Image 1 (cartoon, rainbow, N blue to C red):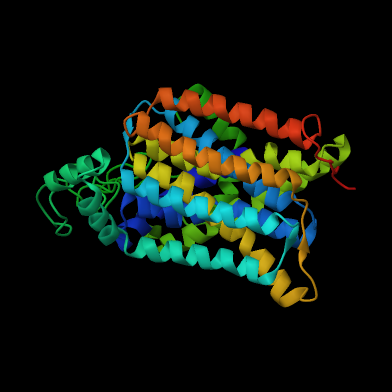
Image 2: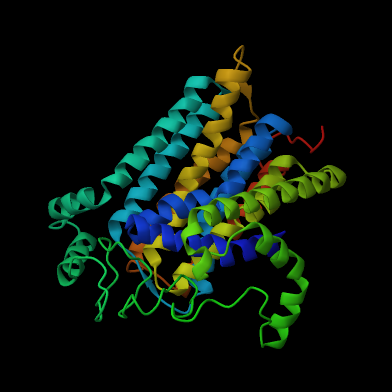
Length: 422
């Protein structure tokens, strides 16, 4: 299932995201916080519905809160350690996403404090996400206003203004002649370099020139280990080829929305199997469901976020990687709000949803601390993602995971545990 998700993400999801961003004229961070976050967070949405309507346990909320810590620290560590490019970051996108996520986590913490979820509480989560989308719609204007207001007292805003002043505004694509383009938050094209757009269509992971159609997925790699992996994954490649249009090829390029939706659907279906397998394993081994959600399920459902963020970080698109990391967590709060609202407002209107909030309260508080740490660490690191920041995030994530497991098992603290199946 991990291999299948990585193939879907690399061959179908990211290319479709590229074309969507080009058509809508999205900047790096807005694309990462919206379409990229929503598509790669489809597993969390599936897991949330499973936890509310199928298993009727805490596996949905614990998975989302656990994967949020993994997104903040684990994926940031992967972007720093697995990328040879030092990615520069802008101040406003990170501040915007961290603020929205802090508000969302605080709202969830207030809701689960009494172990009951009412319809108006779940509706407030949807309202928060709606306000977040509204801010993204006017992101450029808000960014320019804040930079003018706070640039005298904040060095990071001053640097951002200097960078924007050096870069020319985008006038549109040219049919001929070179088009000089630098990375800017006001750019609509997010994957183009200083080359003629009419000669090639670049992507997050190095697509070939548009004059040469992209090779078929059935083309065998030349390297030995890649050949072995290609043969092992051939059934998955064949299934995806028969069901999802490859928008990297000329014939299917205009079908990019179908590719986006189908890749998100396949990611969700594969995650369903993953949730089922891990739930059976947890019941067999007697592992508490909250522990499963904080560890294996968290890493499994966040695998698309990991692959996507690392790929864009390797291209130097740091704003897009960080906006996907934090923006997907904001979308995850919506994932909790949707099934809660449907069940409390339309299905079971007589009473609230009961949740086990003892360990989850500790997790939510840790999330807020992690957001503050990420923002301060990036600020002290000079607004860049490098191997030093990746190593620090990795150590902190391991420490948090160990402490969370010990707390959920009752070894530290006074937290009663519940075993899967009981």
